[in-house]
Image (cartoon, rainbow, N blue to C red; front, side):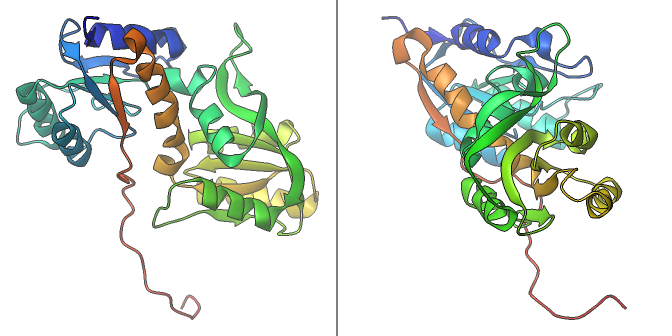
Amino acid sequence: MSPATVGDVIAALDAAYPRELAESWDAVGLVCGDPAEPVERALVCVDVVDETVTEALDLGAQLIVAHHPLLLRGVHGVPADSSKGRVVHRLIRSGVALFCAHTNADSANPGVSDALAAAIGLTVERPLAPHADNPETGLGRIGVLTEPEPFAAFVDRVSTALPATVPGVSGAGDPNRLIKTVAVSGGSGDSFLSAAAGAGVDAYVTADLRHHPASEHVEAVTVAEGSPPALVGVTHWASEWPWCEQAAGVIGAVNAGTVEVHVSHRCTDPWNVPTSTHEGSPQ
């Protein structure tokens, strides 16, 4: 059997994560590389940075499939003395193709939030914010636990299920509140706080929760207990990392499994310096 090509892998990823599902502002698809080139080995990661490019080169990979676009905003050049340009030059010089599936992977069914829900142990029921023209797709997911459990135990569940990061996992809510129905949104999700509250879920798991929206949400819980969901905050990278295994499965099925697929376990979360534990109050 002839080896798979970059184009073969792209076709499989486009079928799993249709580009028409991407948001209008997004930049998805092939960033660099030749669709006709063969692929024997591929690396899947969340972020394309020097570390993950080095990992791909060490593996002898001909393709990187990433969730986050390398060039999301318009650029006028990619000089090698810039951070993005350095990555582009390394990829091209090494003959490594780069393909990105971002908000199309967020909205696809299954997609990023399905992978997050599965990692936590949820049975998915429906999207949190379904597309009007296809309610089976959309951003976020709503799912249920097999059995209800106290919120404190649920926060521990999320922490155990996701890869470790320096900021870790935080919960906002009554530790004893029973959690059964849960909304999740991989990546930045505080814009869906009202959608999660409107869905009547017990808890909402997402990343990049800002202080004021989260604080106002928690205050609403104290006014109308049991109404808005408790919150679980995780890092952006950790919330999307489970998708890498899902995408690896898509690639692994290409050309009767002729592509060797690796998932990067390198933490590319930007928050990497822990603080020492101390007691005291703000001055």
